Structures are given as C-alpha cells and as structure tokens.
Length: 251
Image (cartoon, rainbow, N blue to C red; front, side, top):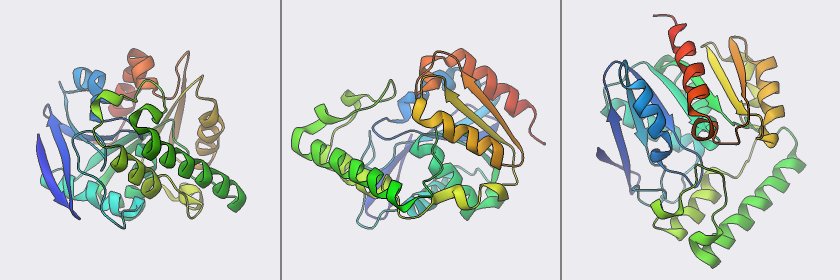
C-alpha cells in the first residue's frame, strides 16, 4: 500500500500479486475494497493495482480543478509508480469512464479494457443538463445530510468513507458531463474490450449494447441476476468472463 501526492491530494493505491498488471478503478461512492473478490481470483497470475479515487476511502479530498482528464493523469502516475508500462484497465461506472479517458490520452500504455456498468457519455446537451442537475442534487444532499445521503448498489460502503464534503466535491468534479465523452471516439479504440453489464442494471444495458456495436474489437456479456456492481453480485460469472478475456489477449 502506498500514498502518492497528486495535486494537493494524497492518493491511496495498492498492488496485489505478481504477473501482468491489471488496474481496476471503483465507482462513485465505493472504494478499492469493492474488488476483493477479484484480488482472490486473479493474483495467481496477475498483479492487481487498485486505488481510491480522491474523496473516497483512504484518499484525500479532491483538489480544485480536478477533472476526468486529470484523474487519467493520476492513473498514469500510479502506473509509473508501480512500474507497469503496459496494463489492462478495468472499472465500474465512473471507473470505466476513466479507463476510456486513459486510453484516449495514453493509448500506448493500454493492453485491453474491461468496462463494467459503464455509460460512455451523453450525446444530447439536454440529457447532459438533466444528468448534471441530478449530480448537483446528489452532491448537495451529501453536504446537507452526510453519508446517509450516499446512494448506490452493493459497491457503496458508507462505513469506508470519511468525508461527506470530499465526496460531494468529487461528485461535482468527476460525474458532471461537459461534452459527449467517449461516444465521439469509441470507434477508434484499437485494443480488445470486454463489456460487462448486470441484467438488472437497466440504465446501462442500452449503453453496453451501443458500445458493443461501436467498438471494433469487443465482447459483451450480460451477467444474469446482477445489478450495477456485477462483480460483487455475481463474482464467479464476472471472474470467468474476465479470465477468458485475459487469456485471449495478444502476448
């Protein structure tokens, strides 16, 4: 476990196992502990690099001016610190979004992408305005009511969070959408991609289908009877899909 100073915030990150690296990024309101089932499954052959997003878990609050692009740069710094030059990136929700952003900025560092319950962006400005209003309402409720206002699925653990103000700031910085996101360049992705989505994660089922139609080298799996955090709800099915995907990656 280590702490990396980045833009005024100390970023908690940790590595488990040995072998080809996989970096996993959690969703909003979660921490790196949401990947415990994957630590148990994959560290026989892989080195899992995990981190807590700013304002989450053991990481400090986000610095002023934090964006999805600055978070991708934080991921690069963590990978450099871990001596991981060529990595499979995976993430849930905003973690998947950041994996996509990282590929866009640093494609030479990415071996493959694993996107779980990920919305790549919203093309409509009106839809982004509605979504950003919902993010602002969530942030305001966390500021007003504390961690009791934190919503989410199995991945969200209020007991592992310490700073309502940090979470509210993180929501405003990383969840608000100011452009169409990865939708503009999904067709340019030149590494293998695995899309996983829970059958009960209805907001992201259509997004998963859209990405599966748009990304060139992609495989999609719908995980039966799983919600947003499919890796927690159905770890055996998710782990099997990931292991198959990793086995097919070019050496």
